[in-house]
Image 1 (cartoon, rainbow, N blue to C red):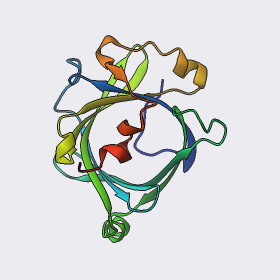
Image 2: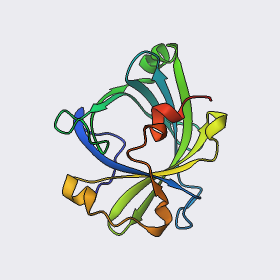
Image 3: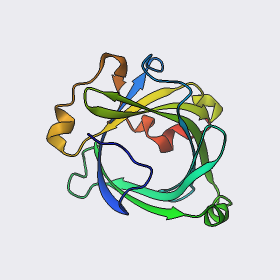
Image 4: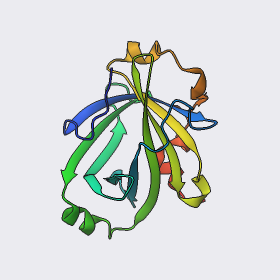
Length: 171
């Protein structure tokens, strides 16, 4: 089971599927979440993420980059993720860069031995209320064999319009 910790290895292969949900699943405790504030730096593949508690306390700051996986360049489920952990002071310097912002609440839900991340978008305003779920697996066979819960809704893994970068567009 993938636990999706706040801190992970510097560089890793990410194997993931994404879904649009009609609503937050009833099994989720709406009071237990972290807030993700993202800046997608203009002209790059970089994302600065500030993870906050529900009351706004900064828990972790990280600079990330996602690229197609060279081992499976045409497979939208596979990406290479590089992460650098930063201080709030370092992040403040980068937050001055031009880019697209996004904000969402992230919930966790364990279902059938899999840990799901469920995001409810707050910003940009055009995405407010959008509910998405993602799940990671250790291998492609496990990812393909994943039993998708009834609450998961429509799969959008292969739809670039549902990438976090695309959803951060204010239009």
